[in-house]
Length: 119
Image (cartoon, rainbow, N blue to C red; front, side, top):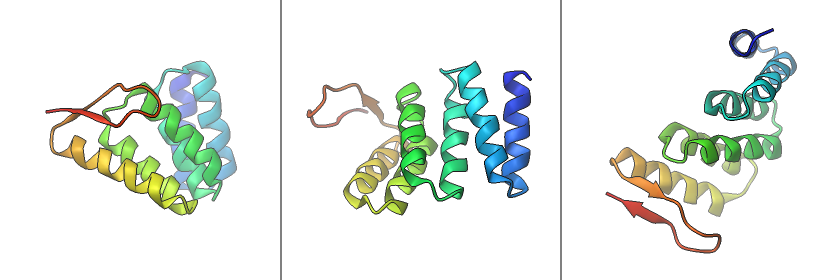
């Protein structure tokens, strides 16, 4: 199957509540296109719906690493953290999403450095 076919099958599976199949298709999509925000984001959502929050967080981190200025990706990562009981991390991601919603951009920073914003 192609990347697009796995994405389509995964989307259908998640809509039908077939979460294991959705995870399998989205995992295969990430293998075919490791740099796809949509594949990693979809995998995170499938993991969240499966109540596999640690896996959802890891997939969400990969998605926002690919596209750090995607507001929806930040909101989703915040939800994964919240559902895993990691409230400070959830709040930090929600704040980033809010900044993006206001038209700002997140700038790269070094580990341990405070978040930088442009705009």
